[in-house]
Length: 556
Image (cartoon, rainbow, N blue to C red; front, side):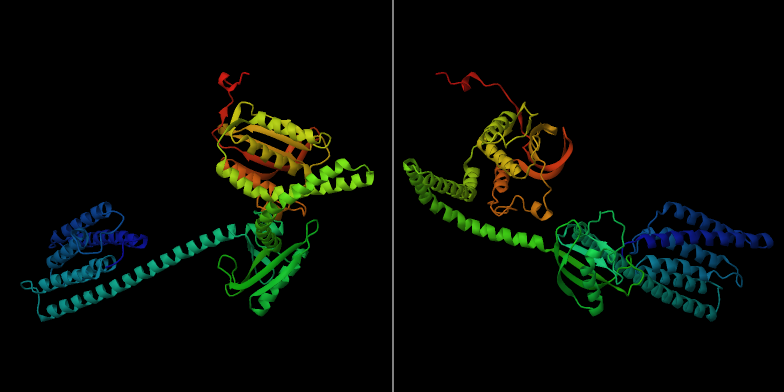
């Protein structure tokens, strides 16, 4: 059985219906002309041709755009059935020795063979053969020659029906195969585009002349080209990328995959260390007209990111061990600080007092280091046991800012812009203080010397969602550092524990808030200034601040 009708077979169906109308019209004109030139001619033949024209025209209008199902059914009667009946009637009505309508049976036989299954095709050929044999056996219809001619014609119909059906079946099979191939190619193209867009490594596709035909966003970022860059573009014109071009040329020359670690020196940027891997492939048709000319697919892996990831993993492992060690040294360290304090009270010599002060300062530094290391365990404990609370955002931020600024008034300067005085946020007050102090300490290390180099701002956004932002006019972060900002034990400074931003993220997630980093501009009195902004976006269920109730006041 043939497959469901598709667009090509729908067009064949319409072509057969149109051909029936044209055949009927030609018969009507021919028989009408013969009847007009012959006085003894009958009007039965032109009338039958006219009826055939009317039926074929109605079928053409009412049959629809798709053929009936390929199996034998009554839906084929207005087409195949009518054709066999009316052509057989024309053959019976025509006088002996005049027009032979036998070739017209080929039209319904071809229609059934192409648009139907094998049973319908052979059944149509058998029907046409029976009509021919009936006409041969018609009283006075003919002799043995007519019988032989009808048998041979019927045999030809069977052969035509079988061969035409096999060709149609082959056409359907090839069409289905082509459709599946197109779908597979479309799926592969979509998957390739998705992988190219989201793979972390840079991907370049180069030809033998060094022209880049494809590049994913990661590769364009390394090449310092925009996403709207015109492709192809020559890599040979970029002098800094000569080592990568040499790897591609070596891949073309050897025909084998290549692996190499190269360093790209781009003026004005840090030295870029890359691991290159390249393979040869044949060019798709939409990339080049020379289908036999291979292309080089090159993967660019930033070694800085790999080193940062390994460093983070090592630091995380060391951090777990350091937490246990820090817990063990807290008691001896407290004893050392207490003994030094008692000793410092007894010392009178200035030199000895300076030594005691050095002991106290270094002991306090050790205390801060142990506290930072133990912060991980504390945060996890607080996240699991801290109750939910609602605090006024602006009042809490103002109090934390004043406490933080009071420790070093000359150095800790900045602007406070509070614009969410009517909102409360779901956040523990101590946790919010810890998040803000960590962000302020982080900004203090990189801010400039101006009075407005640090800005702390609150804002009520759309849907009542409040936000807190700590902005400073520091230098932009490197891409490799920005990716790992909120990871534990990751820091760009050797003397930092790398836990501050990680603790901020964990506390924010505990209360349904989010924290993010972005490079943003702020208009100050000295003009527009670019800086680093850390933004805490609180959950949407904020509420208006209410005045304290009498039940909240303790009367002594």
